[in-house]
Image (cartoon, rainbow, N blue to C red; front, side, top):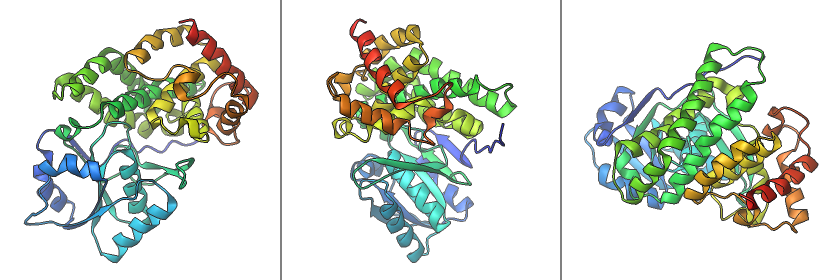
Length: 363
């Protein structure tokens, strides 16, 4: 085993109604008085009722992001941050805004404050950013040497968010168990921090399968309930802790590799990150011949309208060239699928895509 670097949590995290009312004192305690605030249009509308722009102790300069986490956009925000002599960059939004701010904070060597408005990924928790090109295709991800200074989660800001994004977050967090488990079970012994990651991943699965559907119903009704808050924090905090404690032994494996392969085909660009990962979980399980587990998940997937078939993600059995392109992209050298046991070839993935679809059609 190689060494494990633990970045288990941000320096400060709070999830409570009214947490943004305390932002002046919280940021002042971190010697932050002047902030560049990066946000999306919808995310700012969600937070605005809980985030008065005028304060006694803090200065805010607002900047809307351009819609994608590219190297060019990271460079643009970093340049603005350096030129403005800010103490910190504040990110308000979903996973892409938060990933952008983390990357820009690292590049400009400024503290990062994250205010999530979606629970579609654990981006608010993890010290890494997923990078795309200008066409929305995944290129790489970068892990940063330190975690965010503050994560301030106002759960009321999520109530108006699209339910579909929340469901995608449930799927992305569910993958924590299947991907971490397939890597960790190969280890001859588990260091304590890896065991923490393993048990946290198990907790993610248990909470989501038991409470996920109720939480989705509560969000649909815009009711801030204990079930909803529990799943929101599972997506953001528990999901982030898995990779934070387990490092490369508990980050990603087959499911996210399939996601990355799917991003190469325009037919899948209508799908959210978590929706592609959801399908990737099924493909990973099929490659592991865990058909019983797949059949257990299918009803849960269907109750949340998550993709289970090729048709759901935009393909047909006859799309041989496109499916092979997905398989080839998912198995390039260095891709996370090679963390799985066995020799993961493009032909293996291609045949698994077809086999999985036949099983799904019979379920």
